Image (cartoon, rainbow, N blue to C red; front, side, top):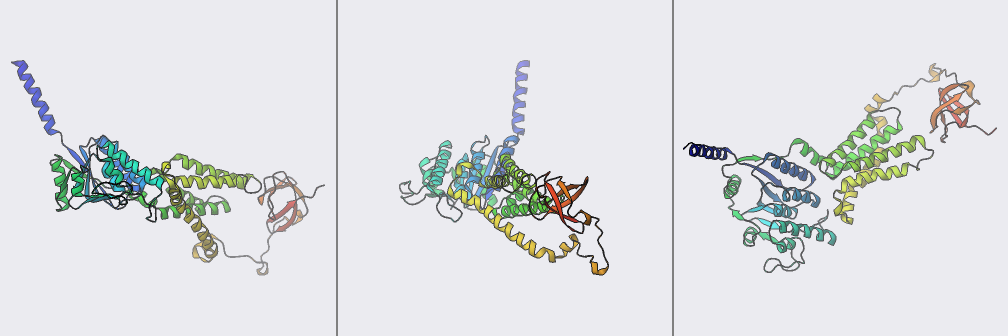
Length: 447
């Protein structure tokens, strides 16, 4: 009797625990153009869903497509997750959106919905190369294959040469309506086109999540900021301002606003691209190595180019690799797309430099930074330098002169400058002119 009672108590405890276990469902919007910022958001949501042990993730899709590399990132996050995924097409999943829908475990479509037309196009909307088409066709095929859906229909959505009887004649891409998708088992069921909330409830009830706790996911402020910073035009502006800041910092003594602004802009560029997995630390290290080579060439090597040219090439390479993204998509189209922001940044840098050189001296901000008053001799001012007696004196370059540096004359270290030429350290020099406190030198004649 005691054993029977104990068994009943344990059974009731198990029932109670099961009843208390609450189902949790994440609802994630995939709307508008699919791009790299959305990919970072989806990766985070799927990681959190697995960590929190949620019952399902519902992807509410309404998109005309977007960037292929971003869609592939989202596809991988969904396809290889242990979390139950449901694609709710409301009302369309076109191009890259079709790949995301096919990666989901289940597909639901609203009445009048569409899925398909997934051929890859370039930035001008023209059909991509055969290499890209072949690549994307196999991605769609592999995705459909893993989820147990028709691989033929998936390929026909990408390649117009794939003919599907009564659905897609040769030369036409496949786009399925809701009814066609259900008939050919690409979708599980349809919901009526009622209010948005009612449609979602129909989806939840169909998969027995009617009593689940619903969490609507949205991008946080950091992800929204990253989406803005990775926009091609803003990326070009950040690169341009970064270059300008470093150029002006090299031309001025000490450390100031230019260098700080340059590093901040380049930090925002690389940081945002790191967060959306466009770049990794190898690209950052390549860029920094290029900067170090340029600086070494400027300050330690006679004549620019020995280290400067390789440094500039490394800097451009680091920026380019951060823009191109996934290496398996390298084609002339993808290279041109990645190179466009670099070209814009170069043109913008030259234009801004010209504007700053011509207009800055006349601005109020320039007057704050630069002393405009002068002390002229006809006003009674006299400069006492004490260096006039050095004219014709021989000495030695204590540091490299590029063209400024330090020279030693009779055991005195003085700041000197050449008339444009670069001289190495320990080169014999002669003072040829003194202008106030400025000492001009040239290489001494051989004895």
